[in-house]
Length: 132
Image (cartoon, rainbow, N blue to C red):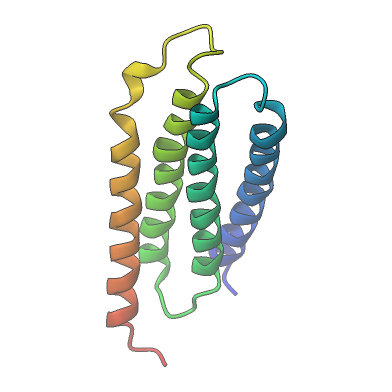
């Protein structure tokens, strides 16, 4: 295992721990603070964050992808989490935040696009991999 692979695994592990904590906050702390629709939206952000934390972890365990390509995929997923899930969290919490988050709604699809590009880059890398 390379140092970078180890760093990917550690990062994914920390992100997953944060995701579980944020998810617990959403499930228990927000239940009486926001509308049911906002809570559902918040849960969507959590779900996509979990998927991509697991994907980042798997990336760190994949020896057939070169480090430069792993870095690209890693950052696409990290930025996707920040843009997609992060903006969803803020939008879901709009009714309890002291500022209006509605103006950042355009960031959510950018995060989704980063996820898609990351998955396509991963698929292409695996298809082109010569290691068996």
